Image 1: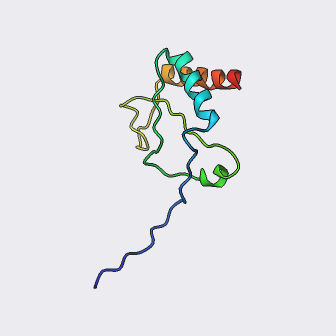
Image 2: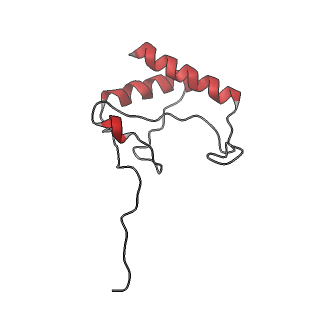
Length: 97
């Protein structure tokens, strides 16, 4: 009775249904570029302002990087080869659209 739970601040959730047609396009584009089945994670442990757009259009994150990218640290980085293949993935998505 002496504990109060405060409403944490942050962003409201945003989610694009897994059966949205864009998921298939992004997955196919990924398979074309990476030459293997594309892994889909329906949820991610992160925040961002996607909710501002998710009611109007599908919002899907596509990340590139590796285990040593040190995401959100002072020495965050990306390898050039990861950046380039990510660019090819985006180009392939546009081609399929």
